[in-house]
Image 1 (tube, helix red, strand yellow):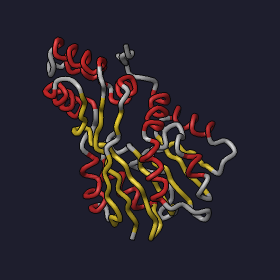
Image 2: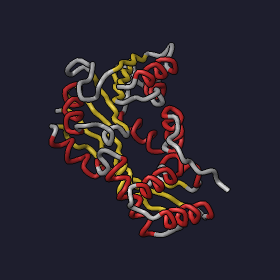
Image 3: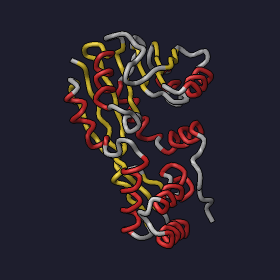
Length: 251
């Protein structure tokens, strides 16, 4: 029987596993940036540096920015010897000069921040005229899981959106907010990543820990949560959600 993830995983491990599961869309973002050796590229919210080496293979200089000192240290370790400059900083006040980067990526960061429009304004500030950025965000309300009770699935989603994720529907808002920040929309795409392994989905989507969090919050009864999770474990299992990708340019 698959092992349930009852506690929050180590963040670096979580991000590494999420990167493996999201390999296809990450490649799409990288290709959309159209990086060249004369470019300076920026990764806002670079985490442990998962995507920095791939950017450094194409761009002349790469800057990674993250708020968490532990992430910054790990990203520096992973990019030793590469043309990568990892800086500690807030996405709301990037430690980057005005109009100094040609390309930027913001991958699954805006659902965490206090002020998404403020971060997009910072992105516009640091992009050179004609610069390009690739943004990606899931829409947490769209999580669809089978088998099991649809009502419990919906109650689970509602709990996650109300209590766990700060900006749960930022994916669907992304193009509008980017345009309002003065960025020009080049493309808007969606995809629906599919997870067929319960253990992987349990880790990445927090199925067990958030189902029982919903029980403690009075959103789902304990019998309903137990029955739902048992059905998911029994399988065959499928989980998916909508992931929005937006490519923008600076005027």
